[in-house]
Length: 271
Image 1 (cartoon, one colour):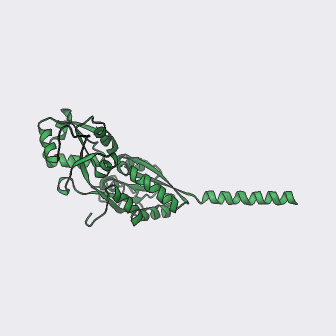
Image 2: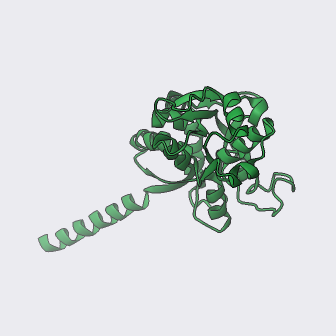
Image 3: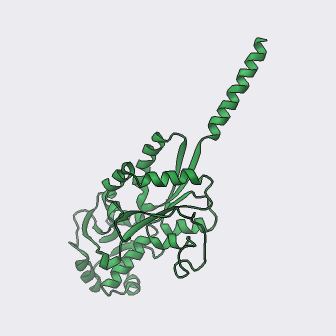
């Protein structure tokens, strides 16, 4: 009889353990590389408050992440560093923004989450004495500076393109002359500046903060538009309710205090 009870207890325990394991939810979050440090900090806070959820992050350029989602990668939440990549996945966007009519965004889940700033950064001691975008433009015209910027499929690169156009500078000509180097995401651009292999770089203010770089200037809205980070639950999410809950939490005061501590700001009107 004692042996039978032991077997029954073991069976009940096994069922309980299996039930506990099945209750754990894994959320896969695709996020722009500029969110790396901040979301890794947030991960610990969220998982402590929600022990039934495990966050798994995939950080890269928004363009690369968009392609991965388009090709069917498992993703519960996508946070882009620009509207362009989110629009390309959202059937609600017009045909100009989403020409392939991709339908990856869960209806009603898309929000504008954060705002960032585009910053001009320099290596330690600023050896070329570049004190702003006006000075950078003059040096580029004279061919006397090496600038690091993001690739053209990377939001920070697209913002930089707009800045070059604002100053009526020919990016292709400058690149051919060896005055521009590129990075596949904002972290690569930041690394080039930190290592001093370039004279300056254009990154986000938050990446400058994380890397301890000196910001000599910030781009105005007139120069490159607003830097808005949209976020949404993806249609292929296997845990859409948990994904929505996480996205709602990211917009709350606890998460926003972490974002604001590194230079992000809560989204303002007319974004």
